[in-house]
Length: 128
Image (tube, rainbow, N blue to C red; front, side, top):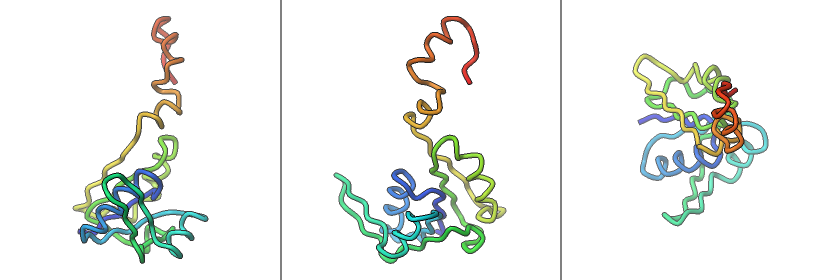
């Protein structure tokens, strides 16, 4: 299965690495220094479920270079999801499944469900 991971940080990197060592064809979409580190050193995961080193790792900043995938996992911070989905368009073909992983911490950071929103619920005002 050809899998593209958009956002190879903590969440995307973990799941992408697990899929890669299980034999799937995983392509990591990353940028900047993180991309360079993956290209030069591979992707290292330290976990209580077992450490992993994916080296060499397929990594690029250009989704078009990967082309359509069977599965696209979008694992970016909440506020980057909309742009990441637009950027991921070249990865999506007629039979591609797209999954977006978000964490509650990311949602809380964006102000959607943080404890300080309780006052808004009590007064009836809408969250952002």
